Image 1 (cartoon, rainbow, N blue to C red):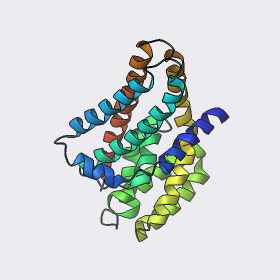
Image 2: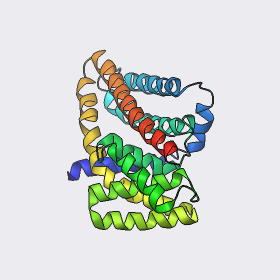
Image 3: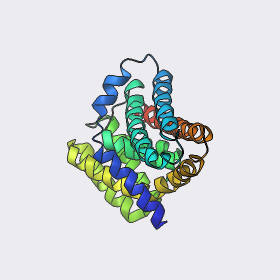
Image 4: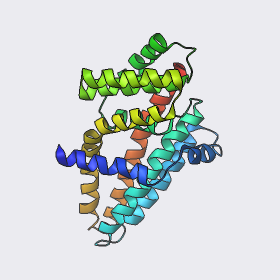
Length: 237
């Protein structure tokens, strides 16, 4: 678990260091007519980079790190783009943390309904922030599922304060808390995929095809989670 958590934290740290911004997603997705076309475009780009990075046996070990950076970038941009395309408000890092929790298996999609009802009941449909209240509620449920009732209470307190005041700093703190809970699950999810890329990369052609296929799998499954999350966010806003 320690290794998985370390790998998960490394991925989460990369999301920060790459300086990815939701505005990049907003500009990019505006050129696409549908959610599906946006997802397919981002997935295809990630697949091409993954294949190219593992195309040369031996060199692929270094290429995998470049591949990982691009994949992380595409994961974030695609997630936020889906939010814009379905008409839900996008809360940057908080939405990304919640979506990664769903994708990594830290929580089930049932949490979306529970959080949605909680957001309406506790904060009220007319509360400042709209969909942001839903994002806070999901983060609180994630804390409760992964870290226990004490963490859930703390996250709920932060969420209620943030929904009432619309304070971006509080959203950032809550997102960081959620990310810390997600890290072990994210690390476990990615560890086997990275290991496979390193091993199959020694085999000409097979390595490139496998690496590209892994990126497609990651992007498609993440897209499913992001679509479910943002459709629920739009519904309960």
